[in-house]
Image (cartoon, rainbow, N blue to C red):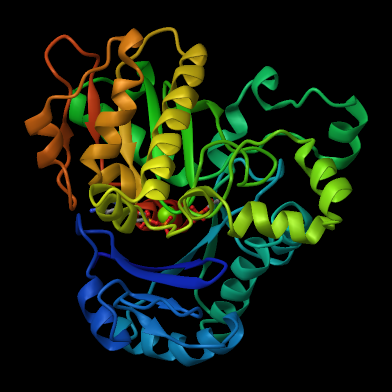
Amino acid sequence: MPSRNILVINCGSSSIKFALVNEGQSSFPLQGLAERLGSPEAVIHFESTAGKESVNVPDADHQAALAQILPRVEEAAGGHLDGIGHRVVHGGEKFFASTLLNEETLAGIEANIQLAPLHNPANLSGIHAAMNLFPRLPQVGVFDTAFHQTMPEHAYRYAVPDILYKEHGVRRYGFHGTSHRFVSKRAAEMAGVPVENSSWLVAHLGNGCSTCAVVNGESRDTSMGLTPLEGLVMGTRSGDIDPSLHNFLHNTLGWDLAKIDNMLNKESGLKGLSGLSNDMRTLTEARKQGHEGAMLAFEVFCYRLAKSLAGMACALDKLDGLVFTGGIGENSAVVRARTLDHLKLLGFKADDEANARCTRGVAGEIQAVGSPRVLVVPTNEERQIALDALALLDA
Ligand SMILES: Nc1ncnc2c1ncn2[C@@H]1O[C@H](COP(=O)(O)OP(=O)(O)O)[C@@H](O)[C@H]1O
Ligand SMILES: CC(=O)OP(=O)(O)O
Ligand SMILES: [Mg+2]
């Protein structure tokens, strides 16, 4: 049987990422697709992304961008597609594993729109567009939240009146589960430890950032909550703040909920603290030039990350290692070193040379002698999504 191809579609709030994944290859044959899209990353953006080598479809919404791009994706696949895998951000409590998409499961995703208003409608646009263009292909939904459905109740409940959970689903769900699942499994392979008897701390640091405690291949706690706003400092998201900030801003400045929500999701994090950029590359350069905002944003980012990882350690009985992943985790030796500095009490220390070597897709161990293991593991959410889709096609 020839090896099969899965098209992976990840519809974010302002970009869409495509990947063509072949089951027989360890890296995906993005080349043809990327060339046809005119974008090495096979990413299309609707917002101005100066300097990014990607296809820009300015002022388009998801439907318009997909209508323009999907036929080119179809051409790139050369008619050899066996299924489509979609990233779906919020699966609520309904989805604890990836699932074939049909009328019933789509209704389940729609029911979670309230919980992820920025993400789920975008994900649904991708699904509907793909179903229209490829009506005969099986389509699979892979949920960010699914991996975290194994969290114990004491980790996922908020200390608010019970009825808010029982009747309105107010609880911690967690996100980036596909990445945490992929890299913790890879870490176990790299370390030669059986996944089913392993314990990891994972830091996924991209535009969105989260930590996770993974025990025997299952999530036991994670830093994101009801929505992807809770937890770490991120590119434009604040992460944890005092919940009374809403009241304070309303009473003192007259801000309404929409304005506060927008500020916390889009104007905060690295961008808000630095007053310069949400991009860690820009901040790393500016920090070297002595830019005060960039220095502050960097320090707060690393300290809060270390604090979250130390908290996640409560969910572990032993530690096989700490894993860094995502664009920042995979590439920024200075973020890794500064974060480990704050974790001295847990015995962590980086080996400077090994740390500097791990960048641009190079995986490896970066701890100094005597420190618990620290791994840099490139994530591959697209590949994990394709593997899940293939498993469901076989079921
Ligand atoms: N060499 C690098 N040094 C520091 N940060 C980097 C480097 N390369 C990428 N990044 C950062 O990674 C982040 C984007 O991560 P990525 O995982 O690609 O995002 P997304 O969550 O959108 O998939 C940005 O903050 C970017 O600056
Ligand atoms: C859920 C989430 O934060 O996703 P991303 O990192 O893609 O924004
Ligand atoms: Mg990402």
